[in-house]
Amino acid sequence: MVGNIIGTIIFGAVIGVLARLVIPGKQAMGWVITVVLGIIGALIGYWVWEGLLDKGDTGGIDWIRWIISIAVAAVLTLGYTSMTSKNRV
Image 1 (spheres, rainbow, N blue to C red):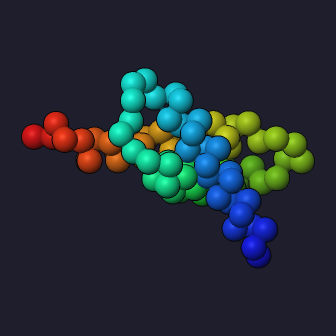
Image 2 (cartoon, rainbow, N blue to C red):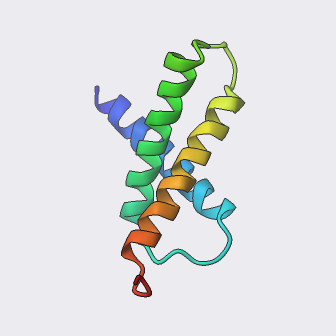
């Protein structure tokens, strides 16, 4: 149980950082938000891979699931930065 939580946090941190790397420019957000958005992106990516695409465990690295997770986290990051931007009208 604790190992799953720690693994999810680490996986979310990696996904969050990768999501921020694919977005051009600087995002004004801290590392905690990066990890939280990465965890949410990873969970949604896992759900899409397992639930909607019905792929399950392939026995190797699921690159498509990683790409889906990073894309979702990038969209969440863009949404977060647009909602918290000081230049909002």
